[in-house]
Image 1: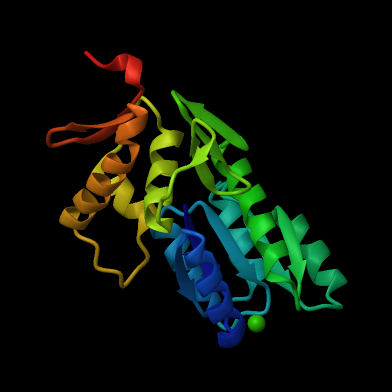
Image 2: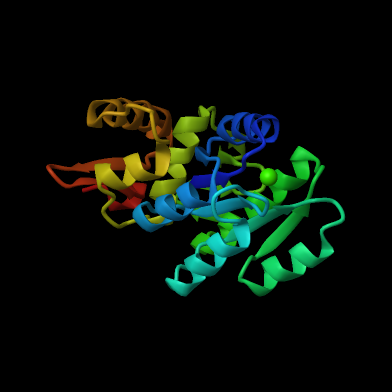
Length: 224
Ligand code: CA
């Protein structure tokens, strides 16, 4: 899951980035509306968290341009506490949800989960062979036991589960897992896949390498 955060208040932004990354999201951060607009044109994101009061193009304008391009990614707007007008304008311009500042981090994270679920069509629970993925807890269980995964490994498994049985290219993995400025090579992706593969091994679920193309997640009964 890759999130674009457009927020010019560095204290709010730092807190959000830390919390979301800890939960395994890849977060890219911009501080102006113009930069948000540019980023949204060029990159695939699963969610936009948009402060409405941004310098160099305000949030409403960023949102209008986004929707004018028929881009349907979920958008969560952040508004001032008394910003009823701004909330109404934001929702009218195509925002999916809003939070008023100051907000509680746990509520923001719950809204992020709900919006990314809606945006990706990801159900709250996915069963894949002996694995059960629970979106609200962000954990995977194998025969009732939580599988010990790092945030990165969990994010990787989410990408595979959303595309189960289909080919996932290394580029797609890099796009979904990595923020800007994070140098993640194809080799690093191979290392993450290797670690995840080992942890899934007892379940029989396999990450099959399709040489030169990428990977696909397969159930134990697909074993030949
Ligand atoms: Ca602001």
